[in-house]
Image 1 (cartoon, rainbow, N blue to C red):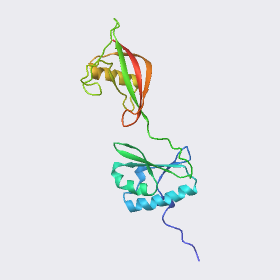
Image 2: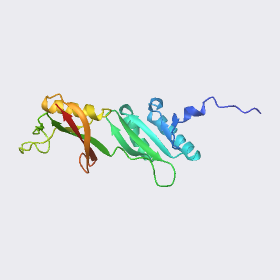
Image 3: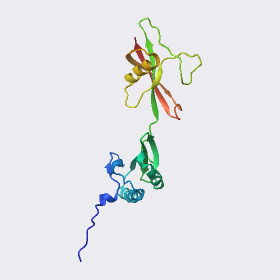
Image 4: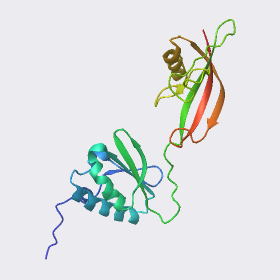
Length: 196
């Protein structure tokens, strides 16, 4: 008697994605099924496969349109890693050992701009919003480096936003680290020097 071969490709029964450079797997969010029951079936099969293949960390990026899949993944052992405006990242550690996946971003980068003119006079501001608002405190212009923004561009932007002054970036002259600042995260604050 002849054996029949399956008409369904085995890859169609698993969640698609790519192996990473650390022995793990990154699930492709563009290849996720829309149906939660199909997602659950494929997720369970994939977890079995990853265990068989001795995979390490599994990364599951769920765009907001797949929010209903989050509880399913959590029930199967995934944990929250981080979230952005348009997605949630979950991870699963396969080995029965301590998880070595990197934690989510732990710091934000701040800027403090020391702006001096040719007469060595400093440009200082009083906060309109923030911790020193209304206290009469004078301080250097400060702010946060945006994602993908270069340090010098962020510093120029912050000086312009807070003072209206176009200053020329000279150098970074100091670094300060603070803990427990924004939502419990740490901050690296770079002090930069400007000239007018």
